[in-house]
Length: 315
Image (cartoon, rainbow, N blue to C red; front, side, top):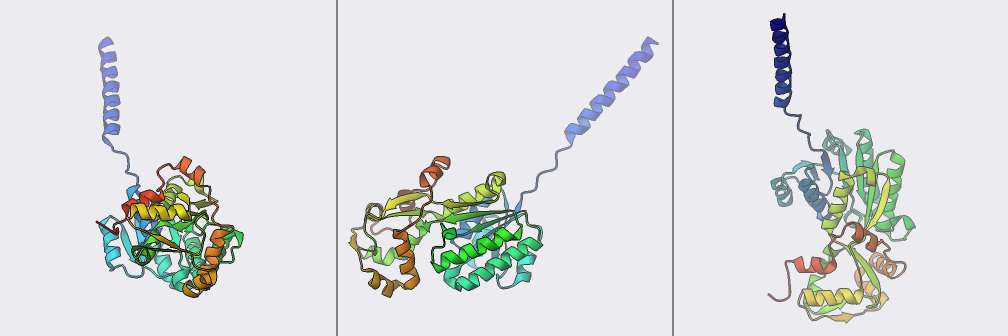
């Protein structure tokens, strides 16, 4: 009887050991990375978002009208896939959204005009709604909701309103002026001129495109903190004079401030650009830079951005 007891106990022990060994030998199913469709993936904002999401382990599907371009190939080399799509072709948007969890959407009034931009936004939101998308992140413009009167700000807010009514889970980032825009000033700056209709004591806000990418990455990584929110984002705030001083010191330039009259600035830059610069003066961007930098201390300062520029006046 005693011998039978030990045999039974031994059998139970072997079964238990076998069960443990079998369970330990089975690796848990690897969690598949979430797939995010990034529009404008070969552009400034979309490219920054794509690179950030890749660095965070997301699966990035870039949308491009030309998947064979050099910029698209560079993105593929980083680990993304690139698919052909056109904002004017809803069928291409629906095809690109198959199997996608989230989308980063950026539209462009500068290229297509405000009315066409709004239609593009509608097409993107409609395709996302039909695909039952989990998270739609849209890049708008800082203070777009205030009725600035600036056509390419107001068109962004028109898209925001469509998004609010869509029923989609959304996040809206509203960036201020890009630090990257300094590249458009290169010719004037290297000639020694800082041309601006504003006074040197006027304040302004900027953000680096890579930090837009970072913020969008935060939204997708921590959706519970970002869903249903529209956030004005900026990385630095300076007076125009402080900005000019940094351009001088970091790019090794001797700059002269050429403050041109508003009517002359409008004749050169156009009515909408002059309207925007007047708005910069009053009321201007009002993102809470201090709070943003407290929460995200690695946000790029203007000085850091200029130091990273590949072009300088002298080597």
